[in-house]
Amino acid sequence: MQNGSVATKADILVVDDDPDISQALLDFLQYDGYHVDLAATGFEALARSKQLPYSAVILDLGLPDLDGLVVLKKLQEHDPELPIIILTAFTAPERTAGVVGQGAFALLTKPYNREQLRGTLRRAIGVKVLATRVETAESALSASENRFQSVVQSTTDTIVLADGRGHIMFWNKAAERMFLYSEQEALGQSLTTIMSARYRDAHERGMAAFRSTGESRIMGTSVELQGLRKDGMEIPIELSLGTWSISGDTYYCGIIRDITERKRMEQAQAEQVRLATLQELILNSAGDGIYGLDMQGSTTFVNPAAARMLSWTREGLIGRPMHSTLHHSKADGAPYPAKECPIYAAIKEGKPYSMDEEVFWRKDGSCFPVEYISTPILELGTVVGAVVIFKDITERKSMELALRDSEERFRQVTEHILDVFWMTDLEKNRMLYVSPGYQEIWGRSCESLYASPQSWLDAIHPDDQDHIRQASTMRQVLGQYAEQYRIIRPDGSIRWIRDRAFPIRDASGIVYRIAGIAQDITELKRGSGW
Image (cartoon, rainbow, N blue to C red):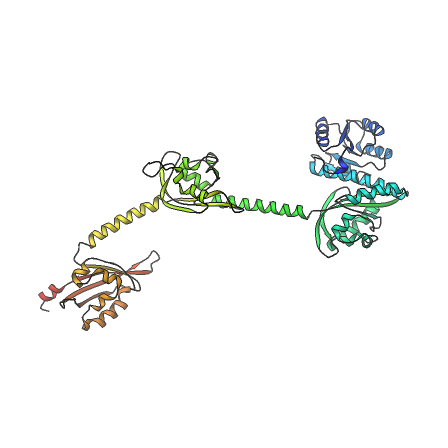
């Protein structure tokens, strides 16, 4: 519950005339382990400060009796080392300018951020402890020095103290681990040694400004930047700065935390958000229906297309057992047991199942044919559910039925005419169809032509073969093929054939098949005196 050992049992004085804010701060700080006193006026705050040595004060500038800056000054006169955090709704520069320079530890505005206040208070108390112990050390009290060393050397945070010139005068064990410099290497070095080159000019300007004006934008706050290790590697750090004076000399304290892991987690969380957003965009824009199932077969997510096809709302489907909702019956109305469901089988067996001869049922009781695939979802090698992708194939089924009807009518026509109807691919390497008339006229089986698509040419009379071979190659694709030729049947009889062909084009206008009709005109030839 506490956010650091410095927070435990510390006494905090909250000075604010707004009872709601005071109560909220009381609850918040007590939850964090602090002992909290409340004061609603400046005079009450000054009286309480004389009764108890507070670890820190949270002060509102707008008090009903005294100006907050007056209270700030008097509290400091009583205890110069007391860290005072200004928490105010005032944002006008004339009210807030120079507050830190006048001795406030930090300035926070209402409405306040709890985490920011928590961190600022922790740093304020820590800086006071450190300042007190450094001052005691300056007075050569070795017992206090030992206690100070015990505290700062055992903490996991890096603590660096520097003199007014920015030269390192204290370097704890955590600093050695973070920056890889030993204490002997670090002492006396400039603070710029451990900061990235891009911050050094700003650091020098900031120190010069603080020495001349007593004001700093980052003093009493925490900032994130890049630290520089001895091996040249930059690391992300969070830096909290404080300052104090002893006998007119200024000293600085930096509490530094390596936030590499935090940044990694933030990046991972940002990536998770990005992927979740991308997944949502994909689900929302997909034309196919998509829904997810847990191990019990209940819905975990549904995309808009699925809800629309099923006549449900997305919210209405979440958590429902999907088999009994949309897959409970077959197309003829017969029950579809869940144990036979391929969608559930993907969960139980851990392998994908796809179907294109089943139906899903809408909320209104109607059904529609679907094609779906159910794929198990794996998490660290363990099946945790399934994702189902489906599409309404009503139109495709209608087209297939129409095509079958058309093919059946075509077959009935071609199989009852005496002529030969034939169709090949463009290269004539494959006979796609030949009607039964081929067997009657050529005297050869249709199967033999399917097996050897060029065998019809072998039956042509030798005197006609060269011409027909050339014409079939050159003219059929142009739609200019209309020839007469003789064939020799296996029994030695000769038949006259009139053969016509025309190209078939696809939707793009490209010729991809050749079709034709061959007629037996032997009797016509005989009647004409052949």
